[in-house]
Length: 181
Image (tube, rainbow, N blue to C red; front, side, top):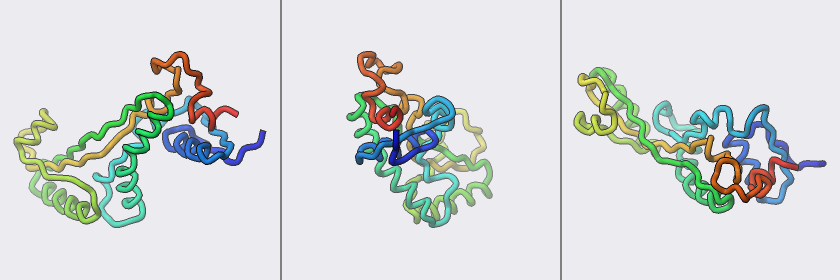
């Protein structure tokens, strides 16, 4: 059987690419050495978190911010097409500064990230306890980011596979059209 595209790696990214290609009418083979979504995707890969380590302008930061903006619509389309609910959440990440020097560095990075379009905000000490109840008492300050994360263990589950839709075949899934020749 001939394929228009072969995707190696059936995690969130590989499966998403295969899905989009199959939607455009291409015949796609999706391969993985293990279980679909069983490696990095099941451990939080696919996290859309432009905050944290990015500080300089780059094509990657533009892509990260745009991906985070588009992702809720992508998830809604995937849920509609598969009939499966996807575990997608916009979570928060808190970065602590235990010393005045670290707080100054964190504030500087947050200003640079804000200029790049990465949303974040400083947390007052009393607000910090709401997000991190067990944070050390001597923390000088904290910064809050709002990343998003799909749960790859649920996102990549085929209909009928532990989903409450036992009457549907995995071949009915848009992923399956890409995965099963």
